[in-house]
Image (cartoon, rainbow, N blue to C red; front, side, top):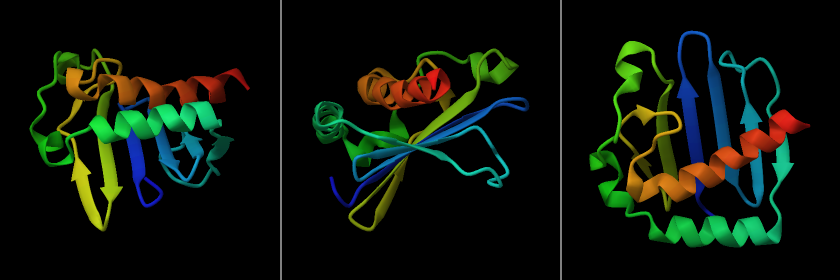
Amino acid sequence: MKTAIIEYVANTRGFYQKIEIQNKTASVTNDRSGKEKAKTISISDEDWKEIVSLFQKVKLEELAQLKAPTQKRFHDGAAIANLNIKYKEKEYESASFDHGFPPAEIEKIVNKINSFAKQNNEN
């Protein structure tokens, strides 16, 4: 897991959120242009163990074929979200899904990743 980079991006015309998980840190930004520096959050040992456990359950080769449970993003009812994982010099990306409504197979890891954005908003 030390070599993995997990990136979650959700966006619409008026909303952008990018969360990157790597080496026990979460970087959170709401700036689509990249001009604003991302806020870095240290991940506790307990949260890190949970992320590693959830990561190990993700079937990387199947990520692109996962079906979104809802289609609100098609009519601006939800932000468009993607999960991107870079691991062992390979990149795996999910099909687009509604922010807040990930495919069941990755729901737990996506919700855990999003918990760091919520922490960022509370600070």
